[in-house]
Amino acid sequence: MGLALPAAAEPSRPPHVVDPELRRLLIEAVNDSDGFVDRFDAEVWLVDMSTRLEKFIADPEERLVLLRHVHREASRAGLMPEIVLAVIEVESRFDRYAISDAGAQGLMQVMPFWLDEIGKPGDSLFNVRTNLRMGCTILRYYLDRENGNITRALMRYNGSLGSHRYTDRVFLALDRHWRLL
Image 1 (tube, rainbow, N blue to C red):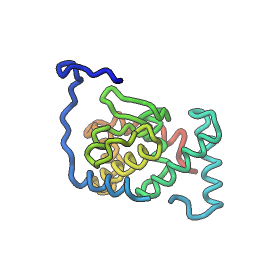
Image 2: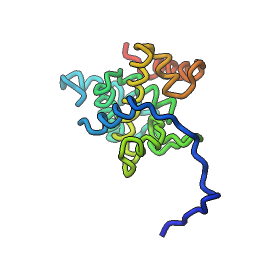
Image 3: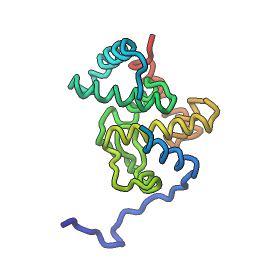
Image 4: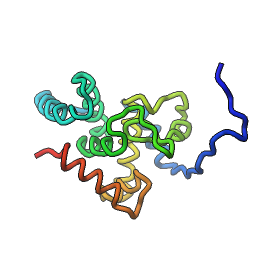
């Protein structure tokens, strides 16, 4: 039996404004169900990225599973998989169980209120596929909202519009670890 906190002791949640268009896109993304078109391209990308990811994830099988999911979800959302890897590096350092001070969860640090907003309160943001699907959908939404300006889209994703601190970190991670030559 779980221990319930008295109402006065419950942590307060910051108010959030839900964009109905983003809610619709997340619902579609969660219900949509692939990534690589060419097997050779898949093998080359997976081997290359797996080598790069080794410094964050030791287990080769775990790396390949994650990379397949990243590629699939980034491609589905029309994003470069490498930018998604850079975002994950900055957001969680590839810790699928990461929780931010603000309560964001998982690899891409998605806020849990979205699960309620899209009618999936039983889903877990610690599930890699769920987290990537939602995180990529949110980033794509902001990229569209900013007319393709990835810097402003990343600022919105992080909730830091107007500050380059976060985007500088993402672009540095992209340049150091993920950019294809």
